[in-house]
Image (cartoon, rainbow, N blue to C red; front, side):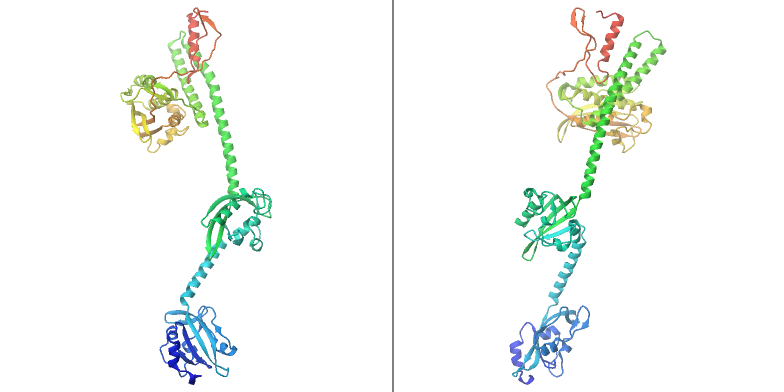
Amino acid sequence: MQEHLDEDTLHAILGDIGDGIVLTDHDEKVLYLNRAAKRILSYQGKVGGDLYFDEICPLVNLKTRKAFDSPLQIAMRERRSLGLARNIGICTMEGSMYLSATCSPIYGKDGDVQGCSVLLRDVTHLRKLEMKLEANHIYMRSVFEAAKTGLCVLNSDGTIMDLNDAAIEIMESSYKEIVGLQFGDAFHCENSILKGCGHGSKCRHCPVRNNLEAAIMDDDFTGEFTVALRSKKKSVPVWMKMFISQTIMGDEKQIIMSMVDISKRKQRERAMEQARFEAEQASRAKGQFLANMSHELRTPLNGIMGMLKLVMATELTAKQREHLMNAKHSADDLLHVVHDIMNFSKLESGQLQLEERGLDLHLLVKNVVQSYGHAAKKRGILFSMPDFKHVPRYIKGDALRLRQVFRNLLMNSLKFTSSGSILMQAYKEEQDDGEVLCFSIHDTGVGMPWGTEQELFRPFRQEDGISSWRYGGIGLGLMIVRDLVRAMRGDIRVHAIPGRGSSITFWIPYLPADGVEPVKRKRSIFLNPRVVRGQSAVAPEAERSEADGDITNLLDYCQRRMRGEERS
């Protein structure tokens, strides 16, 4: 064969081919290398003599580093073309080189095998990309299998192609039994008790079917829904949170369905809902109990106060009058506590309703603060009335609740201020939501520790543990004030310095009015109708108030009868 080779002819034919070409004789001695082969094998010497193929191309398995038997002898012996196995290549100074080779026998004129041709190609770059894809595939498969979330891969027809162990566990079946089924056939759907997806009269309402059909029609569709499904082995439904996404593998679209078993969460939600319902029932029962008890307490308490007032109208010694006055003050304090509890129960149950009627703000504030101003002066405390120059006179609001707010705030300042002053301010200002009316009460009382201001607005909480018996009250007044102000669409804030006093400011929206709107009050008749002084009348009818109902005017009537001022 060698004597028939013309090297110049071979160079002319094979020299510029991009793939490496090696020609050997029957003994694997190299007869020819083209330029590409020399570059691939990094061989720059001459060809000829006793240069064997395995000397310039020592093939090894690059993973095991073991020598690889030459494929040339096999190709010539079996008279067929033979390629290299996977991961076969050579080790160079730069590192491992993966090779692709085709070894083909060369035949002479008489048909005998005279040598071998080897077509070489450097596939290192392609092989590394392939190994990276393999590693990524192994990694993703590991993640796919290890995921605690059930993952199910469907084709564009909705047929299950693959699923992980978590999905198999949820479906309570085996891989072979599930793959190839429609998703709806792998479960018993709770939306249609009939088996399978699309076989029931209610399937058109099924979120699973609707979302799958949407994903099949729209390549960009993603979905999220909650559904109850039953496995074929259990009758108890399994609540699942499901997510649908899509990907393209080659030319085929794949739908990825993620499944999270939320049955335990659903059970907790039902338990929480039941607990919430029971708590609301208990809260309503508590509120009803507080309201009923407050009414029951107020009735005999009003009787006690009435009897005290009647006794105080008689001739008494100074000591007796002092004792009765102390009893009356205690009864007043107790009545105030009862009213606070009633308001607290109404606010907590949401039954308190506010009115919006025209009222005289100037007169309302003056009437409320006048009595507290007298009480402050008696104790040697300087009390400053608000200046109404920059406050409108007529506004819309609930006069009863505004008086209650002012009373509770003034009572609180007077309670905790033993000396110094109490200053009340009223003004109008502009806020982000519009014009508001602001009212501030500043005192030089005991103040409170830093950072405890919000504790004042919690029910049954006071500045410290001894405030209850030192100053009285049960810690509901300011909480009621806050809730009333917020019910009026306003708010309240507190600033205080320990031992130097506090400042409470609240504001409500300014709703202008043209004047005072009369309030129709319910009236009650306590005595039989009689003719009084020639007029057809009834016993004096007293307007109900939040303090003591009709008992005050009734007692006045009784006192006049005792003095002979009223005659039948």
